[in-house]
Amino acid sequence: MTQRHAPVTILIVDDHPSVREGLALRISLHSDLKVCGEADSEEQAMELVRQIQPDLVLVDISLKSGHGIELIKRIHSFAPTIKVLVISGFEESLYAERALRAGALGYLNKQESNERMIEAIRTVLAGHRFVSPAISRRLIEQALGTSGGRKTPIEQLTNRELEIFRMIGEGIKTSTIAERLFLSTHTIDTHRENIKRKLTINSAAELSRAAVQWVLENG
Image (cartoon, rainbow, N blue to C red):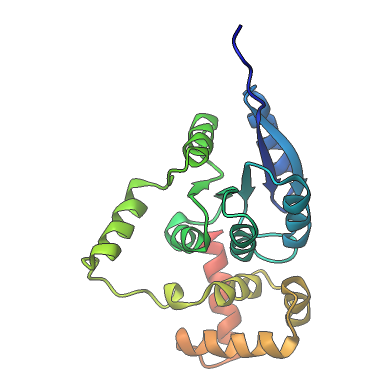
């Protein structure tokens, strides 16, 4: 008699209910995969990670509160055996490397096909990295010291600065940014000044325009 194995447990973390529902539906088509929970924020996700300890966590970069990259770090610190796959609408070229360095094993765009998503899930569950060939080449070149190119001003932003820059572009007030990221308004103001310096921006108005334009171009 063939022994049946328990399905792999998957936690979905995304701030849009419709996206979570869609991912859960796509995953449910495969009997060896099971969605064991859903969360829309960093804190809610960590609470479920501690309670359920899933085999895999699907994480978006943008969350209702907190941040996807910080969540990945916390999951990796809490239980390095839990696999993390980022599924996001943001450009892989900007966030994939950040996610991998935080502890994720893969990065996939939300627009990819169901087959591609399941391939990514199974690859990460097997303990292998899943990124596009372009990102793979970039990581190899960086490891070998042959990339040769300088980082763009946006790439020079830290994970926290990039998240704040994105939220500025979405028209979110400083006080709300501070609340969502569990930081003081003074800390947000300090980050704003660092962003302006790195992007050679002189005023708050210019920072807002640049952030809005970046969000329009990068989703």
